[in-house]
Amino acid sequence: MPNESNASTCKAYATVSPRQWQRDALAAYHQMHGLLVVAGVGSGKTWMAQMLIHALQVPVLVVVPAKDLCTQTYDDYASVFGTSVVEHIDSTKKSDTKKPIRICTIHTLTALAKREA
Image (cartoon, rainbow, N blue to C red; front, side, top):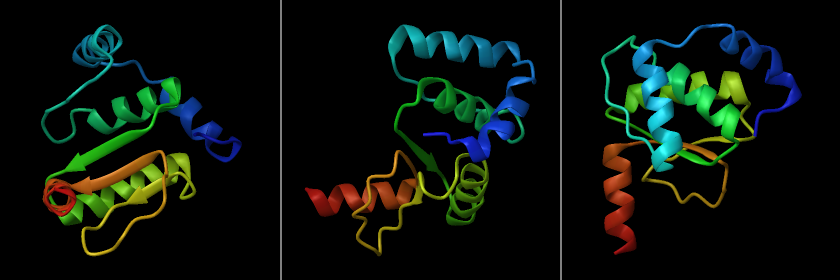
């Protein structure tokens, strides 16, 4: 997923030492092969997720609580990984892309699930 254009950004992230809760969460991911993180603003959730995505090269769905945060999160991830691999999912539009990093609100996720049922 990451490409050469964002390699320096990912290297910059790698120079930051994770907090203890981040180390614990990453260890839990490796044990359970999944992770749900709920933490306060500014706690380092985005940093941890981006490092995990970069290290594991796995597809990911990032769910955020509000539309404005969805846009902000998309911009943040797109600046690190590039727009070719990041998608902002909107329940009002059909998404045919299969980009590995997909970002949406909980409302969008619920609406899409109802539509599929």
